[in-house]
Length: 185
Image (cartoon, rainbow, N blue to C red; front, side, top):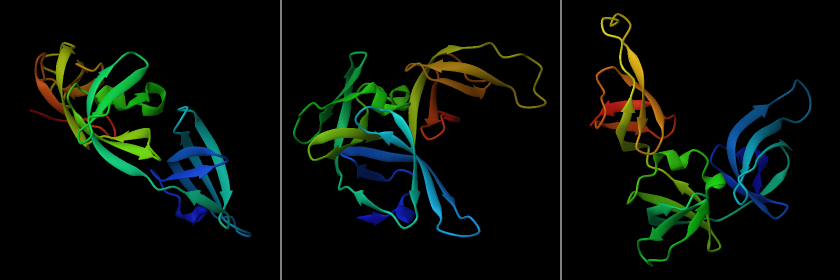
């Protein structure tokens, strides 16, 4: 058991038989009384986002998670299939639970898969990934005083704002935390 004050973004816990991951965290201390902790939590089994409020004195059941290195294989539209690099088992995750992560997944990519009592729950992406540009808008020539950006679409369908010199078939590095362009590779 942990105190509600120990909840932070990315923490996982169990409440009423459901597993949750903290997506956003706010600590509110009024002038009098106990502080309240407001969180946005992701239900790791259904993918639903829920707002929760705890008193700072409440205790919450934390959970022990296991991590395995896996390789992304394919998606059948709803489920995303991976292969454990040690046991060669092929766990699958529902796309609703993954959120924006599928926009960064490329075939053969290695990620860390989170398990709870043998059940696959979530993936941890690397901080940046390299994606190939498949579609690029035309940049306006001569408008260079403010650093021209344009929209491109990557092989995974992710739309990114990039500098005007990035073209189709270029490989770009994208930050998985915020979806922003880092550099051309």
